[in-house]
Length: 248
Image (cartoon, rainbow, N blue to C red; front, side):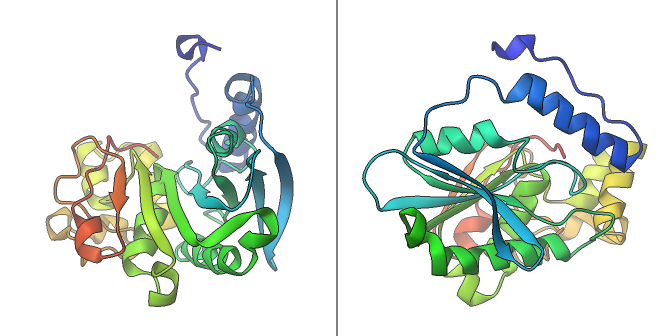
C-alpha cells in the first residue's frame, strides 16, 4: 500500500478508546503485504506479566538481535500493531523481539523501563533457542519507544547496558519539558506525558544532557536534528545521537 494512501489517525481522548482505535487503524492500514520470514512466535512470555512477539529470519543462524519498543505515548500501541515493522527487520536477517511493555496510566514510570531491562536479560539467556545471539543486541524504538530505548542504554544497570551493540532511535521524545513547551502544552500531549511521568513539566529543558536521562529526561543537545543510529556502549557516544522530530 502506498504511503500516501494511509489515512491520518486522530486518537480519541479516552485511553481505552485510543488503544482500540489504534489497533483497528494498524490492522487495516499498516500491516498489509507482510514480508516473508522464517517464523513468527506470538505472545512469548518473558516474565510474569511481560509478553513479546518474536520474528525469526529465514536462513542460517545465528542472527543478530533487535529488541524493538513501539511508540504510542507510553499509553497505547502493541507488538501486533507494529508487526510489519518487526517482520521487515526479520526479513533482513535480524531476530526481532517486539515487546509488549506495560502501558500508562495503569503502569506509570518506571514500569515500562523495568520491562525493557527484563527483556534484555531474557534475550541474553534465551535468544539462542530462536537462532539469535545474545552477544549482538540492538535496541530501538519510535517516539515513546525511542525514549525507553535511550533511557535504558544510558541509565540502565551496567549488566543491561553491556549487552547492547547499537541503538536505533526514530523521532524519539527525549526532553519531556521541552517537548511540552514546543507544543504549547497541547492538551493531548500533556495528558500522555503526565500519565507516564507526572513530574515531567518540572524537568527543565535547559538541564538536558546525557547525564540527566532518567527514563523520561532528555539527551542529546542537538535533539531537534534528524538522525537515527547511536552505536557503541558508552554514555558519551549515545550523548552524540541526533534525534528526529518529536512525536509520541
